[in-house]
Length: 263
Image 1 (tube, rainbow, N blue to C red):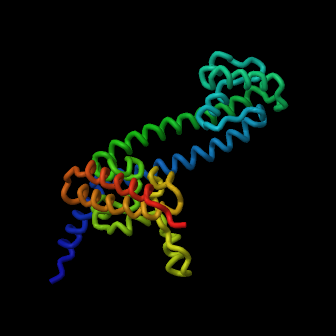
Image 2 (tube, rainbow, N blue to C red):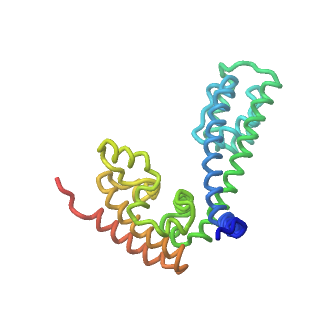
Image 3 (cartoon, rainbow, N blue to C red):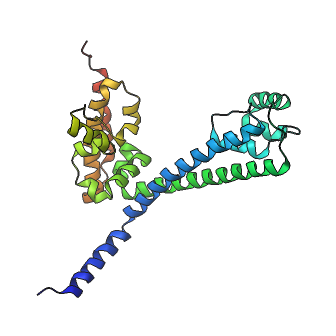
């Protein structure tokens, strides 16, 4: 006979167990870092356009240093010591010279205070991002030590988050891990016959992204094979076997890179 109460109790137990898994914390952390990066980049673009009304000649490739300068620089009375501490003596000298001849608008103190408020919030978000990334590193090392050792903490965290849990990725074949994150390209290949993707998230591994384009597919297959074994060790056996796997992967990469290429 169907027992509704027992079924609901069993379902509640299973849901509670899934929620309490530390994998879930890693999934949320990866999502938070992704959204913080997007928000920070958007706000930095806005600050560049906004502060550019006041000081259009000032540019810097590092968002953090741009926000730091926007937070303290006044064209009429610049603090040279603080500016040198942020940009270095040579770069600071160039900025000081441009500040004297700037074509920017003469804004009020209230206008400048609003720009600085945005710069301050950007720096706070960057600080939060750094702390969250440090937490992600610690969590990835705890949950997936083998994956982290081979792929790096950030990539290991993204792979676990994409799979949903360490148990799920431990059940995946190497071919699935290889294209994880490239689902759109894979579906396009299946639907229209376009070339299949050679890699997904694992493209972020430096040995793939910095290798010649024609060899990336082979390196991606070698990496995904070792990641699949590492994931099973993390999710099932709990044995730390990463050093041997990493050495084997590096040996395979060296063989691929040193092999004579076909003309």
